[in-house]
Image (cartoon, rainbow, N blue to C red; front, side, top):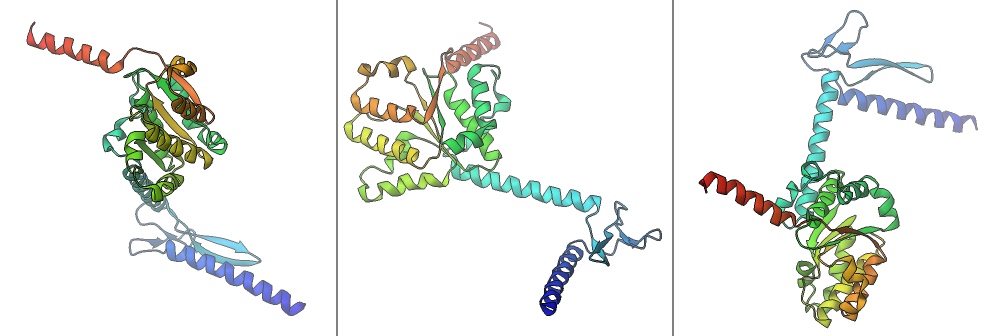
Length: 288
């Protein structure tokens, strides 16, 4: 028993020495550092802060390396750079069009709208939505800002190091068409992303075969338990009138609504409004 305790204590002391050795190696003095007469420890030659401290453990005193102020700043800078590189990789993997990186909540010209606030809150509470597998269905007519806010969500989550894929339904299922053996591979590929954003649902060909592929894609994603954000030009009024869309479409939207919270966009066509403002500005420059 006594030998066992001694071996255990030796293991603890060895681990203690290894930790201190590693700390000393990571923060060892260089040629610009100096020993301060007041404490007998190495100080940084740049910021003058100590690079060592005395540490007591199990009755032993050891001098262990610590980070000075400028070393802390350098480590923080390196970490920021690593984070930036990770975000860059996520965006190169998640966006089919890199111009989407410019769509950010910071440049939203209507941040007080209910839709913008809802999308911001979705990002803020994403972990809760993620754990429940709940996404968003952004509905409304063309040009009302659905794609912009969906892309803002994607950018904000990538900045938080969440893998996100943003694509259109029609683009994605083109890779599934005619590849019956690989269809599940395309669906399974989505599992690597915490969030999938499907833009412009409803613009694809309205055929039984296409609707079957769309349903398989949507259903496959929902079965993973991970969320989606979907945009569509269909309005909730249209979706509620199930007789106005065929049964295969109804089946798709019923499945989506089981996993996505609808947010309606009822505002003016933003692109048309912007074009009108640009026209008036340019007309003034022409003097007409």
